[in-house]
Image (cartoon, rainbow, N blue to C red; front, side):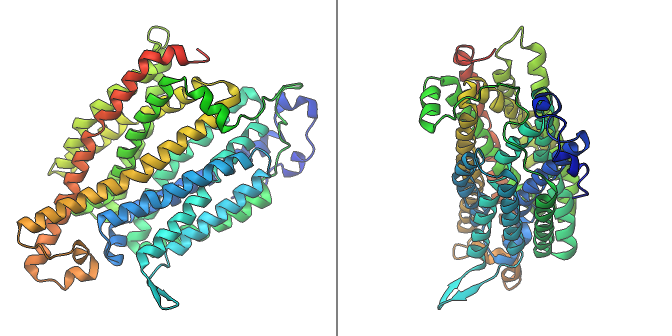
Amino acid sequence: MGTQTGAISADTPASDSQGHLTGYGTKAYRSYVLNALLFVYILNFLDRGLLGIVSEPVMNELQITDGDFGLLTGIGFALFYSIVGIPLARYAEVGNRTWIMTICIALWSAATALSGMVGQVEIGGVVISGFVMLLLCRVLVGVGEAGCTPPANSIIADYYPPKRRSTALGYYAMGVTAGTLSANLIGGPVADAFGWRTAFMLIGVAGIVVAIAFRLTVKEPPRGYSDPPGAVRPAKASFGDALKELSSKRSFWLMAAGATLASFCGYGITTFQTSFLIRTHGVTLTEATLLFNVPSAFAASVGVVMTGWMAEKIVKRHPNAIAWLPAIGLVACVPFYLLGFSAENKWIALFGICMGAGIKYGYLAAQYTIGQGVVGARTRATATAILLFIINLLGYGAGPPFIGYVSDIFFTMSANAEGFADLARASCKGAALQALPEATQAFCRAAEAKALQNSLLITSVLYALPAVFFMLCIKTLQKDLVAK
């Protein structure tokens, strides 16, 4: 992670009374801490996204269906990530934040490394499949990653004075897209060259090293150090307080519904995009990640920034632009995704997928702007936690299983229609496929690709639904906003 630049002087700031002007520690050390936090956030999303990238080799080796894989990447991770995230965020308000993050980094990294070692085990005469073992590892990854962002945001607020915080937090937020890009840049080629298990173990072990370096080099800042002198910190709101305030904010709940539906589609598509490319266009894992996933992730990053920028530019003439711009993008992405997932030519597919990703992700700008804008400072953090709980649990948790199980349904329908009614889909995976007659193998390959393609096309059309909720949000948005 690097050398602790300025660590000594971090213990002896120039003046406690100047914290709101200078921040905590030296300028060089603050920069080190911010980059360390960014690196941890990148690792967070790298570990989170790795399983979706190696979807095909994992499903083939463990002989699991698309529906089962959707559980691994969806509810297996999201349920515990969502549930544990709220108490960890609350504890970060009073506990040692660097220790919280260190333990959580080590936990999710160890679980990632263990994911590369899963296999069938027998305990007390009970046989536990590799699928169940991997599911348990994903649960631990979710528990660990829940302790990353809340304490990190709190640490940044104490290291940086108010006038610099938005820039510092924006820099930290790059970890979302940088982590996704890193997962594709590292995970795909490593898994292709050395196997998916090696990719998990390599990244997991590296994360444990990062946890140790983080604890040794990042100092816990005094809580509230960079707040202005005499600043009155509002009493922490309970969930009851936040829910009471939010109960009258119709635009918040409409936006939350729209964002949840959008993430439902987005997480599902992202999880199975690599499998689609390999099955339908016959590309390698490295080609799928580097030629398709990396460009589409970059396009998504540009789309988020551009939507926020456009909304700022036209807000005086169009105060509700932050709601209707994402709505337009969500509708406009549908034909591009339909093109991307139906085109026979892989380069046309690349164009459609990248355009769809670039247009749709503007809703993220609205998600946080509206989510924090309709409540006062006292309940802002809690309102955001509630919003993320809903989005992660229902969007991340349900999106991948939906695509997976719809794909399973299409496969079964095809098998029944083509005279393969007794063929289990798991038999079309990995070594089991090679044991089948040639005609059955040919059916498996064609049906596997077509079933997933149809599921992705249906999910693409569903992107029009969240647009409706963002448009409905306009009616009460100006009334609900606290700061305009």
